Image (tube, rainbow, N blue to C red; front, side):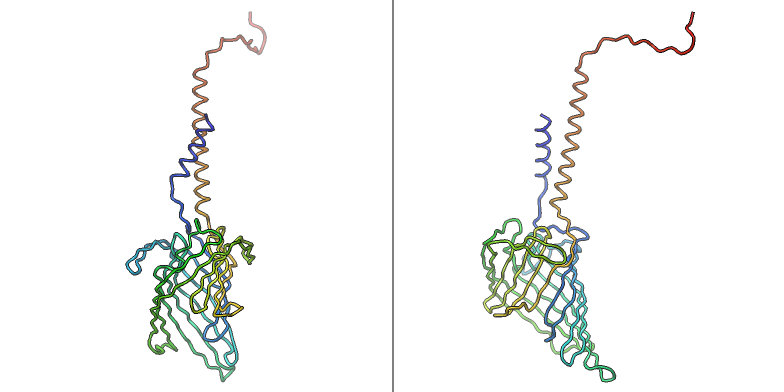
Length: 304
C-alpha cells in the first residue's frame, strides 16, 4: 500500500509541470572558440553567450517566447600589410524557448586596425552594427524533444537585416538594408556523432541547413549541453568552414533534472508522512499489555 501511494505521489508531482524543450536558468553561459573572416582577414577569438532573461517579442505580427542571450567577446588577427586587427564584440541574440531557433540578433563590432609599424603605423577605428531578424525563426522546425535522427524538412524564411559602418567616428556610406526570402532545406543525420571539445565529449545530433546558393550551416546539438556544441558555416564547395564556433566551456542546469529531484523529494516527504501515520495508527490499535513487575534496585542499607 505504501509503495503504491509513493508511486502515485511521484506521478502526480511529475505530471504537474510543463517541461520546456530549452529551459535556461540564471547563470547559464556558453563559451566558444570563434574563427571567421572579417574584412578579408582571418580573425580568431572567444565569444561568450550568457542567459539574461526570458521575454516575448513580436515579429511580423507573430509573438515569440524567447530566451535573451547576451554576446561578448574579443577577436584578433592579421594579414599582409595589416599587422594587427583587434575587435570587441557586443550584442544580443533572441532564441525561441521551445527549440533554440534564431529569431533576432543585434551585434556591434568595434574594430581597430593597424597598418604598418613604428612611426609609419596608421591606426583606424571601425564600428559595424548589424541587426537582423528571421521570420519565421531560422531552424524553427527543430524541436529537441521530438526531432529524430533522419528527419528532413524545408523552411522559408524572410530575412530583414541592416548594416551600418563608422570609420573613425564618421558614417561610412549609407546603411545597407537587405530584405530577402530564402528557402532552407534541413536534414538530420541518421546517426549521432561524438564531438570532443575543451568542454568535454558529447553525443550530438548533426543538423545540416542549406540554401539554393550552395551555402550551408552545420549544427551539432547536444541535449546534455542544452545547446549547439559546434557550428560550421560553408560557402559553395568549400572544404573548410568559412566560420566556426566550438564549445570550450559552459554552464547549463537542466530544469527537467531539477524538477525531477524536487518531485522525488516531495514523494519521499509524502511517503514519510504516510508511513508515520500508519505506524501511529497501528500503535493506537495495539491492545494494552499487562503490567509486569520489575524489582527496584535499592541503594543503601535495607529499611526496617
